[in-house]
Amino acid sequence: MAAEALILVTVARTSGSVPREVGAWMTVAADAVDGTVGGGHLEFDAIARARAGLAGGELAEEVRYPLGPSLGQCCGGVVWLRFVRIAAGEGLAAHLPQQALRPLALFGAGHVGQAIARIARDLPLAVHWTDSREGQFPDGPPPTGWRHDVCDPPADVVDEIAPGSAVLIMSHSHAEDFDILAAVLRRQRERVDLPFIGLIGSRTKWASFRQRLQGRDFTEVELARVVCPIGVPGVAGKQPAVIAVAVLAQILALG
Image (cartoon, rainbow, N blue to C red):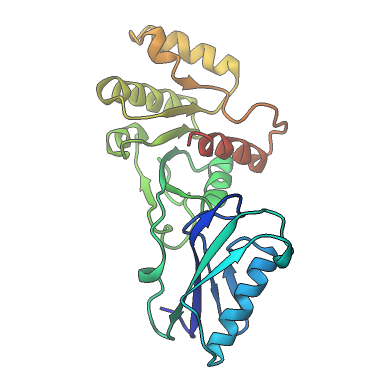
């Protein structure tokens, strides 16, 4: 529930080059702003309109913003912003635009898994996060659309992940990684519904796994679907946050 009255500002329509997509939103309170509809003078004006509305002024339901010289922004497109009053105590979620979330199955809650999860909270992802160990997940309920599973062995969760999921395998154990990957490849063989299968590790690790998987009768075509190492090329550094950024960029690039 909104603790105080708010104005919800949403990108309703766009034309041409614009800073944010349809469905982007922010809330404006008397002394706080959460979210963004694109920054710059566009957002500055939207906040001023919203606060005038909160103060009792007239509030247009939708306003057209040409992003040209008159607004001091050179995008050149047009944005239509919608303004909705949210009374104190009224639920905000019912008014938020529904955003399509890409399902991501994340196996492993070690340092890199934790870094991925922290960043993924601000991305259009619905994360199914699994680890075999108790106490690995952050305190409190998972974000909306997320699921946390403690399962030993974690490979048992593979059949439950959502169709269309990108899969990231990075448990604390190479043995667990191998079993999860084998289960993922078996599922892909049966259902063909996983667009990305990523395994953390070096080329040496993948060469070892590949040889063992060939011994389990996985074909070259099936093994070619595995991405290892993971992350967009050219990003150096082995710090968990660096790896997380490179990997999530790779997931978002799937479209």
